Amino acid sequence: MKSRKLLMIPGPIEFEPEVLSALGQPTTSHVAPNFIQSFGNAMRMMRKVWLAPTGQPFIMAGTGTLAMDMAAVNLIEKGDKVLVISTGYFGLRYAELLLRYGAEVTFLQSEVGDVVPLEMIEDELKKGDYKLLTFTHVDTSTAVMVDPKPIGKLALKYNVLSILDGVCSVAGEEIRQEEWGIDVVLTASQKAIGVPPGLALLVASKKAMNVWKNRKTPVANYYSDWSNWLPIMQAYESGNPSYFGTPAVNLVMALEKSLEIILDEGMDVRFARHQLMAKAFREAMKAMGLKNIPINDEVSAATLSAPYYPDGITGGQMLAQVNIEGVILAGGLLPEIKGDYFRIGHMGSINRADTLATISAIEVSLKKGGHIFEEGVGVKAAQRVLS
Ligand code: PMP
Image (cartoon, rainbow, N blue to C red; front, side, top):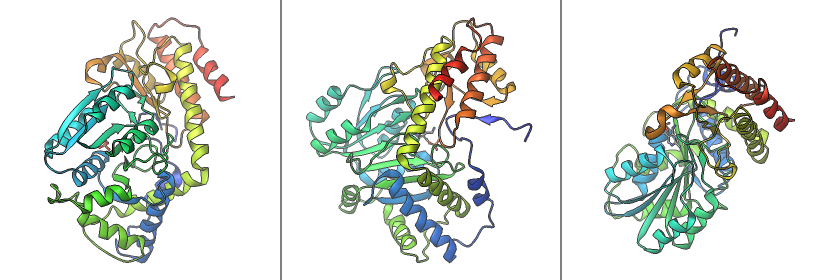
């Protein structure tokens, strides 16, 4: 594959050949016994990847935004108070989505590159009356990582349901849904889960399912309503055919394969691998004189990096040069600083060779763009971390 470029954006990512080959199997009926088995296996494996042994998994055709939609619309009713904790672009999306369903939203926005202080969250929760809070584990627009553990604890303390947007984190960043008391952890297939775009995935706690069961009003979105989907999930898991909407057969077969690969690696090993690759990228950027958006390592994601362009480097030109060097990176996303930074995805199947090749392509492109630094320092810094 001489002309193949390394896809290093924060989703979709590089997929494992076995996953792509599972995707390319002949499509079976969505009620064929082998497909029902794959679907059931995928659900059982999701509980292990999410570390939520008693959670209820949902596998839907759709994107991460559908998973956000499904979690919200099943848990809130018109007029419910929701606290949205935002570290960037996707926090704002959650607020807009919730408003559409009639939630009363309070929006806590962090400074760019930082997280919302826990005291501020607690002060808000103390005011009482909140039914739900949402937060983004890794905001893909800033590469800021929020530690879910203390927020899960606060949600339990104030008896508020919690939704974690894990689109850019599940199977890359450490998540222990049940131990940390988070009610819904949601994601999409195209990121650290390692399956081409097209699946919305979430696991809901028993508490969340009970809140949904005890609703007073119907769910405000027909397609996302768990009344339609829970019986299907339960049927597939118990090995029985069922139908509400046609599942994405091939993507589910690919999901089964990818979850197998993830669990074969082991969750702790996988989290540690992501940490190591992220550190290599951070150190490389620093060595080349680039500043990352996250203000320190503690709030930096393991799944992507977001460095500012150095003075004198223009984004479009640099990304085009990186592409010529054989690597695809992403531009900025946060509207207020969109043109000032770029993003490197490093999740899922990423290995040392991908990391070094990407840093090398960045280094060459910065040099060609006129940025002054000692040649080779980026790759060297990464090598030091990786060895
Ligand atoms: N939340 C986060 C943190 C994301 O990174 C994304 C996608 N980049 C989404 C939500 C939305 O997912 P999708 O594009 O699959 O709808």
